Amino acid sequence: MTATDTWNVMTRELRPVARDPFSVIFSLLQPLVFLGLFAPLLVGESGASLADTLAWFVPGVLVMIVLFGTGATGSNLQYEMMTGSHERTLVAPLSRTSLLVGRALKEIVPIVVQSLVIVAIAWPFGFRANLLGLLLGLVVLAAFGVGLGSLSYALALKTKNREWMFWAVQQSLIFPLLILSGMLLPLDSAPRWMSAVASVNPVNWVVQAERALLGGDLAASAVGWGVLSASAVCAVGLTVGIRAMRASD
Amino acid sequence: MDAPIIEAEGLTKRFTSRKATVEAVTDLTFSVAQGELVAFLGPNGAGKSTTLRMLTTLIAPTSGRASVVGRDIAREAAAVRARIGYVGQLTSGSFAQRVRDELISQGAFYGMAKAAAAARADALVESLGLSGFATRTVQQLSGGQKRRLDIALGLMHAPPLLFLDEPSTGLDPQSRANLWEHILDLRREHGTTVFLTTHYLEEADRYAERVMVMDQGRVIADDTAAHLKEHLAGDAVTLGLDSPGSADRASSLVAEVTGREVRRVDATTVAVHVADGATLLPTLLRRLDAAGVAVVSATGVPPTLDDVFLALTGRTLREANLSTADAQPDTDPVAASATAEGGDR
Ligand SMILES: Nc1ncnc2c1ncn2[C@@H]1O[C@H](COP(=O)(O)OP(=O)(O)OP(=O)(O)O)[C@@H](O)[C@H]1O
Ligand SMILES: [Mg+2]
Image 1 (tube, rainbow over the protein chains, first blue to last red):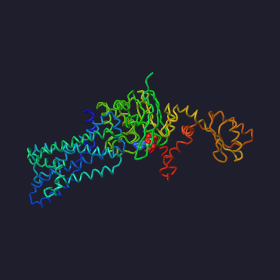
Image 2 (image 1 turned 60 degrees about the vertical axis):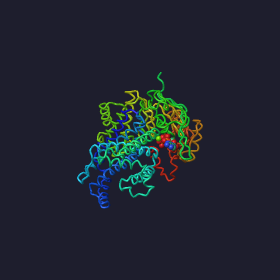
Image 3 (image 1 turned 120 degrees about the vertical axis):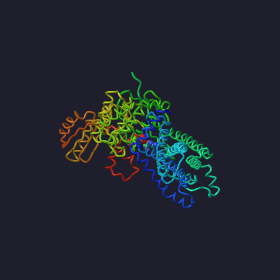
Image 4 (image 1 turned 45 degrees about the vertical axis):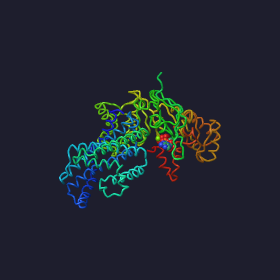
């Protein structure tokens, strides 16, 4: 991998975003619906204040943005494999590693922009975030997103022209990961087997780390586990993704 | 003398999907000298794209080897990629990208400096008639406009060796002429070697100094278009007679004069392929006249590469293309022959 190749691949991927920045905002529709419709329900359910509920819920929404955004990013690559432009980049003198890493790194931009927009929207409703915690939280989300994006690319490369298979695998992984992360509903009252699965779900640890970081509890053990989980997803994702890109034709 | 720019030896590619194995390319051995313009012809599924995809390092051969611009395609794939240009059969531009952005990214991929890439992109946009579309996304282009962008992308870095897979498919006549101007310019100015596939026989005939014909994974002819036509096909001489009886008599007389097999096109028409139709025709007419056979029409048509294919395989390119479409039994022959000419993009 050369840094120049990676940079060139990443800036190419970012051009459509730069040309049409509102596309990044529009894709916030889904998390906003969750925020607007779920938060009041949680308030009613728990009897806690809106500010406390948001302090619990907003970090989960940030992870959800990453989960859905980067989890689906492989479909763009799959489309380019079908139309032919992926083939063009394979013939260009770019290292396979750069082709994958450049694409994965570009995920960081929408993650950061979208997270900041959500935080800004929640602020007038009483949500408060520790600024250093938010900064660290974004770093953790970025690492998690790069890993997840790479896995999504790997899935696209493996399923090739079978779009249905990409979505079948993607959906059947993403929803269990989402529900077993305690992102939308607390897992306190979950049956034992569910808690057991959740305890090895990296998404769960990232959510807990984000709650601690945004809440200003920077020294919490959950932060350590979250950082570890995000780093592991990042490392595994990149390894699997690079391997899939090397085998691409 | 310079070493060949492409040297393939026993190149073979087998695809295995589920239980079926397709041998797309079989034991291909050839070389291309620097500066040559080679047209690679053959019906759908002949193995042209597969050959190009092996030579451009996209897929690994099942067996055999090749060197491209002096580098081995298997061991030095990265070095090969740095020295070639490639326009694939599909669309090179990403649908979400703008035309000019995609050209500038391509320049960056090939290590061009920013200003040089921008200048080159603007020049290509202008000369390939994409001026009004530079800030449109690829998605918004028409088929022919997309194809012109593909070509611009392939030309960005002016490589010493250019592979083009059906570059002219989907282009209107003016754009095709324009494409050929570009190709010929490149050769004149940079001595670029061009290896391209096409379904437009007249294009290969007119511009390529060397024609390779592939059928069912094998190269079945490799020569100049003029030689192929002269040796394999010859001029088509067709005579219309006043009655079936005259046609019978004309048949045997023409066979006697030419020593060739005479085809009966219909009840009153006979045809024969000969090396020199122009000088034979007057002789034939005099002999038939002397024998009292009334000829009502006579044509001598120079051969096309389609005739070459017919001579080589016993079927025309059009028929060969139709037979590859027999998965769809209801294929409308008119539509099918349109695809035969227009490729399958
Ligand atoms: N990835 C693949 N997997 C399986 N079979 C393949 C694959 N690619 C090509 N083939 C088969 O190999 C043969 C040659 O295909 P190829 O694309 O090289 O033909 P072509 O000469 O380029 O035809 P066309 O004029 O239609 O573009 C065909 O029978 C095709 O079905
Ligand atoms: Mg082809």
